[in-house]
Image (cartoon, rainbow, N blue to C red):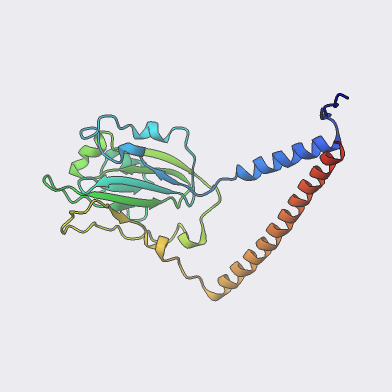
Length: 241
């Protein structure tokens, strides 16, 4: 006896339920998550005189940058990392007259023609809108030779609590140690808020705790409902065989 093959009816309740579940899964996975963006990818953070292939504005194309993301700059002690929200400062490749409120030097260059060493600088994105980056040393020469780019930062998921308020004073830039640097591992420069989250007042802690508890309850309830739908769909399909 020839077995009859089941062909799903695209209008059947079971099929529509399965389609709804698939759309739900894809929608949940599409939510923006915090990301680390390695600037220049394998080329790192250098000017065109050292690495002619770099094109940082091209590197930004097609990427989405959100609050709470980090930019990772892999460079050396001959190059610096300056972040500014001031277009004029960026255009001039000069931060000498920049305001402390809109410009931060995350890593100052420590020029060495004989023993350059690797440095990794982690820069958090804490303000929506245009963010500008460039190397500010050698009288702007590195910046003028391609070591600069601009991005637009979206709200995304918003800032995590550990990063504090973007209106707070930016952490002071960290200068890499100029001592003996014979090891292969690069220095890592990160903002103080990354390892030391800001302590809020007691009332805010209570509010945050309450909010997190409510969110957790809703999360569990959603997951229970989600798996219940999966079970119903599975039962419907099994009953058709």
